[in-house]
Amino acid sequence: MHLIEHRDDVASSLVRSVTRTVFAGSGSLRLQPDGMWDIAFLRSRRGFQVLRTGLTTRPVELPHEEGDEVFSIGFAASAFMPLMPGDRLRDQGVLLERIGSDRFRIGSDIFEVPRLDNVEDFVARLVKRETVHGNPLVASIVSGHPNAATERTMQRHFLRTTGMTIKAFSQIERAQRAVVLLRSGEAAAEVAFTLGYSDQPHMIRSLRAIMGQTPRQIAAAAFSS
Image (cartoon, rainbow, N blue to C red; front, top):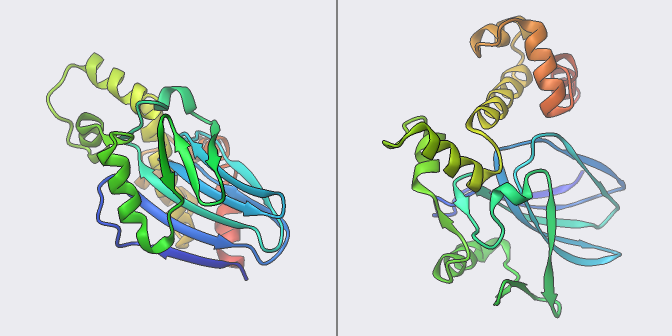
């Protein structure tokens, strides 16, 4: 079994997920679109890397070997990094420059590699240096209660910050909800109706394109685990 540790108590609206995984064997981990972008710290026999990813619209396979470690901080879709805006990084990743074994560079600023227990300090420094900040308009759109703005302004902010249109992001959110329901044992036809897909084949096509799996595969994987 892989060693997986989570932090669910990070007091920042910019952070949605903090996870550290140490792999127990060789294989490949499928990373499905989750509406977040990440700063990930990857340690393996090949060395140490710091990766800034953008939001994804399709699954990404992460190969790993025994002992490899991934420490990932998932930022909300509304979190904006001016030096690396979302519209440049959709479905992409950028390796950040390392400084020795415990520091790395973003622009002209150097940051210490964080640990699971000091993520708050790391995020606070990102904010203090204005390396990352929240986009209130995008946050309001994601929450379902958009602030007053023209449709054009909302789309422009959303695309610049996240790298995708509001419609595309909503499709990913709906696919995520479908996965949760299918894993809980709900029938595919019921899930399609509940989430407003036009019909079950529509949901099947959407999940295959976004998550890389059919409803049957999603349900079977949950049952086998």
